[in-house]
Structure formats: structure tokens, C-alpha cells
Amino acid sequence: QTLNQLLTEMDGFDNHKGIVVLAATNRPDSLDPALLRPGRFDRRIPVELPDLAGRKAILELHAKDVKTQPPIDLSAIARATPGASGADLANIINEGALRAVRMGRSRAMQEDFEESVEVVIAGQQRKSTVLSDHEKQVVSYHEIGHAIVAASMKEGAPVTKITIVPRTSGALGYTMQVEEDEKFLTTRQEALDKLAVYCGGRAAEELIFNEMTTGAANDIEQATKLARNMITRFGMSEEFGMMALGTVQNAYLNQDTSLTCAPGTAEHVDEAVRKLIEDAHSRALQILKENKFKLHELARYLYKKETITGQEFMTLLKRENPLMPPKPQA
Image 1 (cartoon, rainbow, N blue to C red):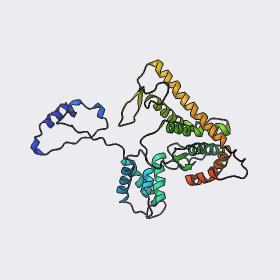
Image 2: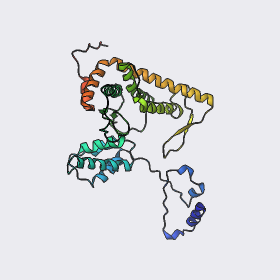
Image 3: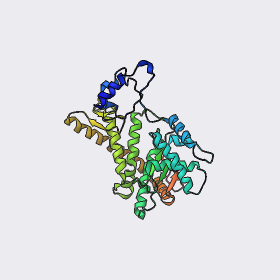
């Protein structure tokens, strides 16, 4: 009834009245075709998540209302927030201002906004969570495992921060990577590199403590999702080639995919996904074995400092150590 009434009302508009009707939805796939025919809602304008320039402009807009202490580099914040919506970016500026007030300052600084990016991504620092000594060590090795594997990738995004301070999202620590420039295409090799980075944390735990913990749950989820997409959506497997085996349920909301293939093929897909992750895990393990000395050194440093910058990490990683056996010359 509502739809019929709406169609009737829209048909009643006279061309001379100068009335434009606008409507918004995040479920364009479920709209009635009668609504979309010429003369009704005949022009569709997809509003995607903002790109780098868009994010910077949105941050600048919201930062006008906040007293800031120069220098403020909002393009660095924009680079660190790919996939953030306008509301997320407004929240980042707001959180930065709140942090400045909590610290007893009348103006927000660059570090406030950088910390607020982490608050929006990973949640507030959870001071009440006190890890035991052993757990803290495990988390240190886990995060440095990710970082060393990430640093050994030629095309990977540089590591910008590593922390083992627990967050309210449930994360006990995380490694932050930020791309230099925005990327819209990912090669197969880059996807494989990303898989290896996801496996780096668990690989470090196995290598050093010879045990597994629940800490890699999110990594496993992300790796499985990426590997499945590589095979079912991106045509990056030799076995299936350029064959779409899944469809995206809703492009505007959570982008969940469902398999559209025979049960026998689905089994092969699962096997191919397992193989991709297994290879990535072996690769991560190999990288960490080759850099075991640095893994120990960096994990001890992170354990002591709790949060280190990407610059500190790279300086220590590249530093020659007199106790370390010399690398064989190629």
C-alpha cells in the first residue's frame, strides 16, 4: 500500500512545479523495479566510502570546530583510516578533542588524533586487564612475528606501530600497517603476502613457545576470508581459474558471500583455501626462523616498552648486532 501510494504521488507531480524527490537506501537490491523506472527515481548516485582525498576533506571539516595545536597533519590520519566512513572520521576528531581535555590541555595535538584512530579501530586502552608475565611475553612475540613477516615483504605496507596494551575490543595487542598511497587493486602476490603476515603471529608462538593460544582467532578469521575470496571471487587459483564460485550478498552492507557451486566443488574450494593458508603459514615460519635472533631482541624490547613506533622497529630490525652470526654472502 505504501509503495502504491508513493508511486501515485510521484506520478502526480507536474513538470512545471520544479520539485525534485530524493531518497536514500543501503538496500538498493531489494527496491521495487517500479520505483526505479524513468520519471520516478531514475537517477542512482552510489555514495561509496570516502577515498584518501575525501577522508582528508571530511577530517578538515570536523577539525574546524576543535582548537588545535600546530603542527597538525590530517593527511597522515586520512592515510591511517582506509575504509572509514564519514561518521567514523567525525568520531576520530571528537575522540582526539576528548583525549586532550582528559590530559588537561586546552588544545588538541597530532598525537591525540593518532591515538583516537586506534580508539575507533581497536577500542579504548583497557587498564583493568592485567596480563601475567608469560601471557605478556606471548603477546610480544605474537605481534613482533606479524611485524617481522610484514617488514620482509617487498610490496607490503610499512609497519607504523606495535603495541601490547590490551584494548576494549578484546585485542591484547596489535600491529598497525599504513599504506603510503591508497591502493585500489591488489595483485595475487600481494594477497599471498598479506596471508603470510596474518599467519606471522601464530607462527612466532609455535616457534618460540611450541604451543598455540587463542590469540590468533582474529588473524585466522581474516586469513580464511581473504583466501576464500581469492579462490571464489578473484579467480586467483590454478584449479578453478576465472570461475566465480560465490556471490556477494549485499554490496552496501557487510559484503558477505555465499557459495554458488555444487557440494563436490565446495569441498575442493575448502581444500584449496586450506592449502593457501598452509603455504602462507609455512612461509611465515620460514621467515621467522631466518630472523629468530631479531625476533627475540625485538620481542624483549616491546615487552619492556609496551608500545613502539614503526621507526623504532625498523631501526632495531636493520641494526647489525655484533653477537649475531654474519649472513652468508650471495
